[in-house]
Image 1 (cartoon, rainbow over the protein chains, first blue to last red):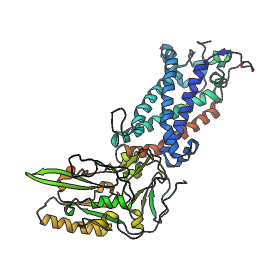
Image 2 (image 1 turned 90 degrees about the vertical axis):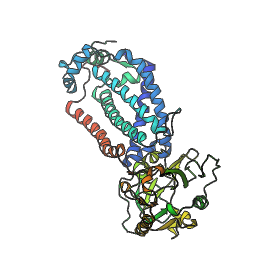
Image 3 (image 1 turned 135 degrees about the vertical axis):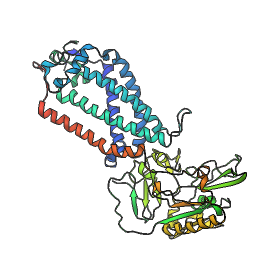
Image 4 (image 1 turned 30 degrees about the vertical axis):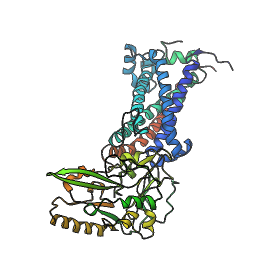
Length: 205
Length: 289
């Protein structure tokens, strides 16, 4: 079937997004497994405890690299301007689908931009706190980190994970069931004109 | 949880990363090792006995200007006699410390471990690593207030003194205690060892060592390897933390927030579901297929 409508994401954007997304999901589930005994069974999906522990930081490397690529690709579109500030002031209307009271958005609405910037900060937190936990004996002559550094970084890593996990739930919910027609943008890359008019009136392809 | 339990017949009081309490309800005696540093002659017979009994391979050593055999503990060096030269009032003091797991009543390693059953505490108080369940994350090393566990890059597991658990199970004392020629290492119930230590401390004080003390730090709930320290005012030079604590600071906070964290994610999913039920999907009006 040939898709009509307008192109929203290129092939490269979609691939990069899914590498980031799927690696994040893997990291979230294995991380939760290590964080609480009742969730340890999640390591089964990663081949058991030792394998999950071995894979987690390497998938983290894949996440970090793909995140940098995604950051560079989308950075230009993610500047927050006056229209975005107006949108943010109306976010409570957006949340209850009262779209008449929400200023029209460009290619990305201010909520998506905040998601982008929050995940960027969390991504830095994951990397900075994750490295000492991964290699407590030291990295490139820095360290060792055994003791207090590792324990504090575990706390930072965990809090950032809960933050990122909550954002992921909102992201997936809005991108799938809440707004029908959105997921196609990340699968085949296209959206309908009606969809674009409704969600991103100032964009229009 | 399908964590593999140790093959020995000892009853487990507590296991790492375990959401439910251990099943044990019987109360047996708690054991302890008492190291009287004032009686140690530095022969290192205990190091050899430890390597022999536990079949730990030889670690080649080099002279680094100390009477000490190895520079540090290792994955197959579970016991190291540390020699420190210290000067007090113009007098040389030769401080010897039997560096090995202290088998804390509140084990920081066990509290930090994320792998179910990788670290267990038996009802007799001994803390044991069960490498079959170890995932090699080394968080126990950071959880230990005494810097004892050592990671093997070869097996990607962590190791430490297990108090010769196979001997203790058979009613024998640990190999180091068995071999010590001066009886500097005593073995018995914790109660008996504390009583013995008090006598020893009293004796040392009578001999003029006013700062002699029993090292059984309350911050970790006491230990199952205790020291009689002749120079209690020089704990730092012995490399013995004055007030070690288990699972404090960031680890304690982590323990609290992780109880809420997974619930927060569950509530997030619930909130998304309720939002959908309340407000429904928002589809473009003329979204023709």
